[in-house]
Length: 176
Image 1: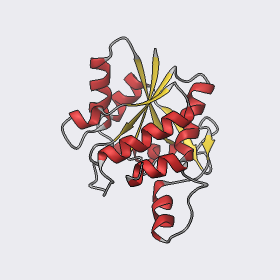
Image 2: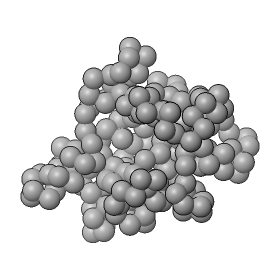
Image 3: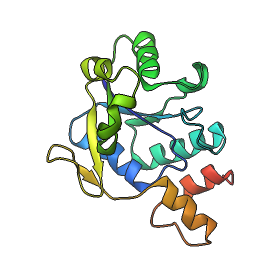
Image 4: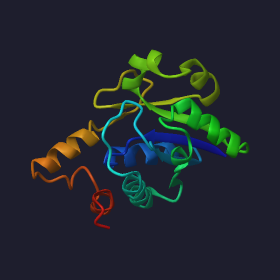
């Protein structure tokens, strides 16, 4: 079983996250996609409570397809959990699976800041996806939507129904 590990803050998850998860399956990059919300952000970024983000990811997974699920492993790891620790924990718990990391093309410019990036590349074969304008011809490009923009619109009282499915937003806000 090939599993794409799609980690992130998911603060909140949005339609571009759903599109990436769907593409990973449709394009044959993975048999399953595991959304892995970060428990605590490595750079102390303020996040909605973990369980709300997990519920929002579950609502998104339900909209995308049965091959997408939510993995809460980061809630069991020391904080902050670095990507390599999460991947190693998954590989240890599920030795029958082959894991690949899903990473945004924008992260390639700062890969030197990642803990043990060389080992991530060697052992977890990153699948690179772009946002807006793809970083390279090999990175598929998805809409330039960010959780930051969703939060900005919500704070300004602007609609976000084009960016976040209603069930996902309700779960993230704690209304569902």
